[in-house]
Image (cartoon, rainbow, N blue to C red):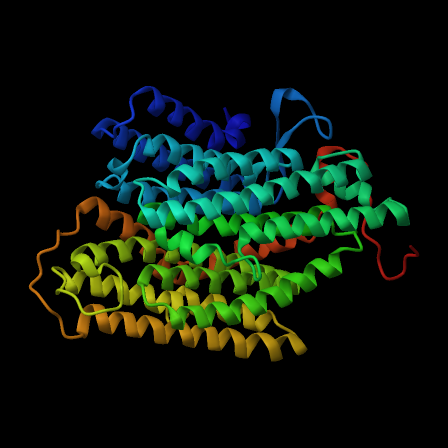
Length: 507
C-alpha cells in the first residue's frame, strides 16, 4: 500500500467523482457526506505525504510500470507535498461551506468539485511536461463548470472571458511543448533539464524561445501583469466556495513556473529573462493590485484584488531566486491562499445578511450576527494586511529580509504601500459593514453550522502558522534547499547526472 501512496491523491477524488456522477445530479445528504469525507481523507493522505517527503528523498511512481524518461512518473518532493496538502485543506473548508446549500444551485456540483481536485493534485505531482498539460486541462474544464454553477448574467459573462483566455493559453502551452520536445527529444522534466545543459547554441536558442513562451502561459494562469485583467471580475462573480477554491488556482501557475525554473531551465540561457520577468512583473502587479484594492466598491472585488497583491508578492520572491526568498515565498503562499479563501466565504455570509445590498460598500440593513461576523472579519483583515501578530506579518518580514541590495529599494516601499492600501480598504469595508449607519432591521438568515465550520477551518490557519512558525519555516527552508539541487532528481531517476558548474570549472 505504501508504494501507491503517491497516486492516491489523484485516485481518491477521481473515484469519488465517478461515484457521485452515478448517484444523480441533485445534491443529497449522502452526496454531501461522501464529498466531505473524501476531502477529509485527502487531508490525511496529504499529511502522510508531508511526512514521507520530509525525509528529503524523492519518491517516484511509474504509471503502468514504464520507467522514466519514457514512461510517465509522479514525483513526490517537499514542494509537491506542500501544494497537495494546501489544496486538501482549502478544499475541505470550501466543500463544507458549499454543503450548506450553495451546492444545490446547479447540478453535479460535488462530482465536478472532485474532478477539480484531480486536476490540481495531478498538476502538483506529475513529473512529465505533457502530463502537466493534461492535468491543467482537467482542472480548467472542471473550473469552467464550477464558475458558472447557478447561472446568472454576470457569472456567465465572466465565465466566457475566462474560458476564451484559457483556451488561448492552452494552445500556446501545447505549442511551447512542441518546441521543447523538438529540441530535447523528451517530455520528462528532469530529463529535459539534463538535456538542455548539453545543447549547442542553435538548439539553446530554440529552447529559450520555448521556455519564454511556456512562462507566458503560466503567467496567464498565475495572473501576473499584464495578464491579470480577467481575474477580478471572474473571482468576484464566482460562487463563494468556488471563488475560495480558486485561491489555489493562481498558485498552480506559480508552482509551474517555480518547478520549470528550478528543474528544467536551470541551465538555460532563458533563466535570466525568466527571473527578470517575474521580478519586474511581480512589482508591477503588486503596485497596480494595491490601487485596485483601494478602488474596489464591492468586498468580493476587493478580495480578488487582494489575491492579486499576493500574486505580485509571490512573483517578486520567485524573481529573486535565492534560497531565502523561496523559503519566504512558500511560507507566505500557505498563509495567503487559506486566508483569501476564508475572505471569499466570509464575504458571502456578510452579503446574505445585508439583503439586496449584498457585499457592496453602501448602507444596508444591520447584520443579524455582527459580533460573530465582525470578529472573523477582524482576524482575516489583520492576517491578509500583514499586521502582527498573525502569519501575514511574518511572511512579509521573511521576504523583506531575503531581499538584497537594490532589491530592497524596489520591494520594501511597494510591498509596504500595497499592505497599507489593503489595510485602508479593509478598514473602510469593516466600517461600512459593522459601524456605519444602517437602514432597515436585520432579517437575513443566520449562519449555518456548516458555513461557520468552513470559514473557521480556513481562518484558524492565521494563528496556527504563527504558533507553528518554527517547524513550518524549517520545512519551507528545506524545500527551498531541495529545489536548489535539481540534479538530485535525475540521480534518483537513474538518469545520467550532469553536475552544475562551479566557479573553477570551464564551460
